[in-house]
Amino acid sequence: MNRPVGYLLNHPEGLSGESGLYYNYILGSNGIFIEAESSLVTARIPVADCEVRGLAPVETKITLTYGSIPQRFFDLALDAFLSEPDKEQYVAVIGSNGYHFYVPVQEKNCNSVVYEVGEAVVLDLHSHGQMRASFSGQDDKDETGSKGR
View 1 (cartoon, rainbow, N blue to C red):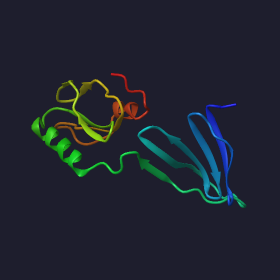
View 2 (cartoon, rainbow, N blue to C red):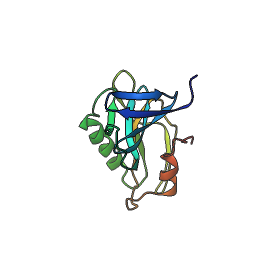
View 3 (cartoon, one colour):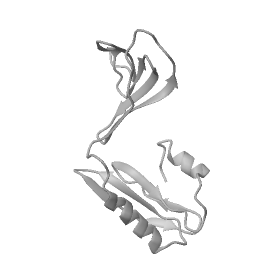
């Protein structure tokens, strides 16, 4: 039976338990981790620290399918943002047979940007125009995976 969530134990001999369809919780000697995999990224991050005797430690892991994102994409993003420094702007890096720079059609002004979310986004970036750098409520919402502008 495939369940949405898996629960695994990290024994010195290896993992035991049933993997989930979407993600796994892994209990190791150093805490509880969550692990998920997509076509673009594999990630294993800690969610709770604790000590559990008899289990092996779990290591944090983040692996991008196409490797590290090249510096040139950050340079392109900065160039785009500096081209209209008084407006918020959005760019992304998508992963589809390698990395590609993505600049969607967008409605931008001095305090917001509305854009169409691309497919296979690995990294998204936006500027704040003339505003100071900060995390807004919209930024927080964007990070929940519920983008749909």
